[in-house]
Length: 74
Image 1: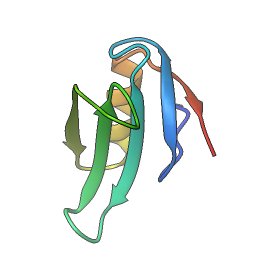
Image 2: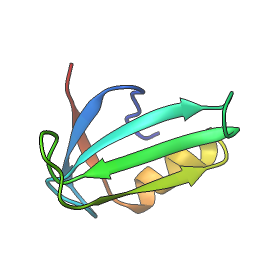
Image 3: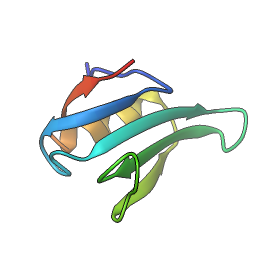
């Protein structure tokens, strides 16, 4: 199972978007799924993206297929 924490920034140590930051948001009440937000820098991002997945299984699959190793912050 993927290492998942919601509402925290994490640094992607390995995989696609290596050295970028990621934040996972539980948006079941809003969109009915989960948001994956990615930026290159927290203070002044110049690159990044966002993704949406429909459920926890899809979120785990997304993280695993991206081959992410994430170090979560506070």
